[in-house]
Structures are given as C-alpha cells and as structure tokens.
Amino acid sequence: MQEFNITWIDIAVVVIYLFASRAIPLWLNRGTKSDTGGFFLGGRNFVWPMIGFSLFATNMSGASFVGMAGAGYSSGIAVYSYEWIAAVALVIFIFILLPFYLRSGVFTMPEFLERRFDSRSRYIFAGMLIFLSIFLDCAGALYAGGLVIQTLFPNIDLWMGVLVLTILAGIMSFFGGLGAVVISDTIQACVLLIGATMVFIAGLYAIPSWEAMVQAAPENGMSIIRPIDDPSLPWPGLFGVLIIGIYFWANNQLIVQRTLGAKTLDHGRWGSIFAGFLKLTSLFLMILPGLMALTLYPDLKTPDLAFPTIAFDLLPIVLRGIVLAALIAAITSTVDSILNSVSTMVTMDFVKPLRPQTSDAALVRIGQMTTVVIMVIVVLWAPQIIHFPSLWSYFQSILAYVTPPVVAIFFVGILWRGATPTGAFAAFVGAWGSAFWDFSPFRSEVWWTFISFIPPACCSSSVLR
Image (cartoon, rainbow, N blue to C red; front, side, top):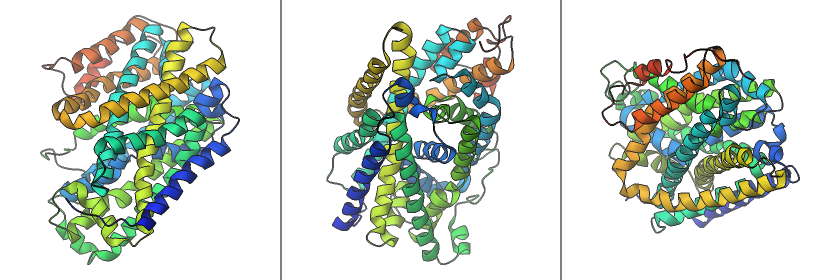
C-alpha cells in the first residue's frame, strides 16, 4: 500500500480545525433551535451565501475528492458531465419548483406531496428517502470516508474511522440542528475549496507542461461529451444523468431542506445558483488533479490513489494538514446533513402527523433521539459494505429505477391540474416494483421516465391546496 508521510504538525492542524468547525457553529447558532422551525429549518433565516456553500459541501463528500481524481486518472474528464449537469438541474429547480416549495411553507418534500396529492404519497416517499439516506447516502459516505482515513493511517481499522467520522458529524446535527449544520457547512466548504485549490496549483507547477498532461491522458480523455459507443458515459446517457440530477437537486430532502430555510425566495434562488457555480469549479479542483497525477505517477496501483498521492507528495507540512482537514470536512459535512435530513423526516412526516398534539419541544427531542439511533445504525452497517459488493451494487442500481418516477410526480403534479393522488401513488408503487423486478424490460432510465408520466395522468384533481 502507498505510504503517506503525515507529521504531528499536520495532525495538529486537523485537530485545531475540527475543534473550531464544531465550536464556532454551535456558538453562533445558540438560542435558535428551541422549536421545530429553528431546529429543522434554522428559523427559515438562511441567506444566499450560506445556502450555496451548504449545498456544495453537502454534495461533496470525501469520495468526491478521491473518486473524481481517480476517474480523471483512469478515463479523463468525462466525469465532469455529472457536475455541469448539476448546474442545469439547479436552474430548473429555482424557476419551476422552488417557488411552490417556499409558498407552501412545508418542512419536507414528502409533506409537499401530501399537500398536492394525499398522505399515501407522503408516507411512501418519506419511507423511500429515509431508507436511501441511511443505507445508501450516509453509509456510503462513511464507508468511503473510512477508506480514505485507512489509506492515510493504515493502522486504524475501518470501523474505527467510521465511528470517529459519525461522532464528529452527529455532534453538529444533535446539538445544533440545521442552523449549526449550515454554518458548519459554510466553514467546511471554504476549507474544502482552499485545500483543493492548493492541490491544483501544486500539480500545475509540477507537471512539465499542459501539453504533457494532454498527451498523457487516455484516449478521448480530454473530451467531456463522449461518442455513442463510449463504454463509460456515451452522450445519450447524459439524459439519464440529468434525470437523476434533477431528483438529487430538486426533489431530495437532503438538498432541498437548505432552500426551505431560505430567508426569501430570492435568497433561495441566489444560493442555488451560487452552488451551481461552485460545482463548475470541480473540473479544475478535483478532476484535472487526476490527470496531473497520471502525468507524474503513471504506475499507481489504483486510480483512487491519485488525489492523496499528488497532495501528500507535492505539498509541504501544514498545507498537507489543510488538505487532510478538507477531506474530513467533505466527509462530515455530507454526513451531518444526512443525519439532520433523516431526523426531520422521521419527526415531521411520521411522528407529528400521527401524534399532532406533540409539543414543539418534544418534537425537537424526538429529532435528537432519532439522530442518535441513525448514528448507531450507520456505524454498524457502513463497515459491512465491504463484505457485500454485489448487494451494494444492487442498492446503487435502485436509484436508476426509483428516481425518474419521483421527478415525474413532482413535475406533473405542479404543472398539470389533472394529476391525481391515485396516479402519484401508482407511480411510486411502479418505481419500487421495477427496482425489485430483476428482469424488468424498462431498464432504460429515459424510457422508464416516459412511462412514469402515465400513472399521474388520471382524471382530474385540484392543484396545490
């Protein structure tokens, strides 16, 4: 295994960062989380820079650093399509969906679906998001983060790295709610951008020339749009990427919750546009360092070593500590956001509707206890992913089936009065049925999206109540 020289000075930088990134948000957010609006939506008082930085930090996990640089090392810059398409999805989100979300005054996306359709859609969508958030998003981020820590510190077991990261993320969600999480994300996004920029600049100075990097790139490695016979991402696949991108940025509680806490619609829009701009920088900050690593180290054992190799070989002491802090920032900002998102859905989509007499203070306590329960689940589950590669791959493939119908339900429900509660429920049932139907003929995301528009097109219904 590649060895990375991490000194006590680098570790000291990380420790100082970890303390500051927890203490500052909790102190700044003191006294604003006593009710459900304060704990779950930060008092609906977020301004656009905080929203933009939080969206960016939540999306960028430690796996983004390692995975994007690794993709750049192995296949070139085609992976950038996932980033620029995210910016397109955010533009669609702010003009079509966000005004309806904020006007409705809801806490969660499932609650919005109940306003438009009925409680069946709320419960099935909430259950779907909670399941995917815990066993895919949160466990996956912690698993990837644990592997990063194990790569840098080989003597640390995977489960120990997962446990430490979970506790670091859980502190923010448990004690501070969404307000502290967003403040923390703002700090961590800045550290992330600083660390990635330093690696890019160091790599740029280390390579012989830009032409040398281009020559070292794989075939078609400098092309973002690939031909139809490309094995990794042919251009028709971009339509499927856009569909999943719209789900992630416009329908997923994890992301949308930040904009639900916006001070005004304009702040929500500006913050989303700012996040889209930050996403566009990933070509330089995360993907091109992989090609630089290919130019400098063409014989790495695995592409995933590209980012840590270029970072810890080229940067001096202290700066390496900042990069390590950026990696931890990327991991924990994703996890604390997921913990807060899931606790919000459990509390506001299940507990409050079923027990409407529950006080705000009790709902906040339930949200905190839910965070603890989720932490225990993901700590137990995340390390097991390494033993079940086929199961993990299958879980990931579920997204290709369940997300297009969700996009259809939201868009048809908002744009057409004729969409009915039964149609929306049928689309959800069809989504999960196709996910578990191993020989489904509707494997194409684009085709399945077209089919998923049919169930909501039944009879007539009033628009958002």
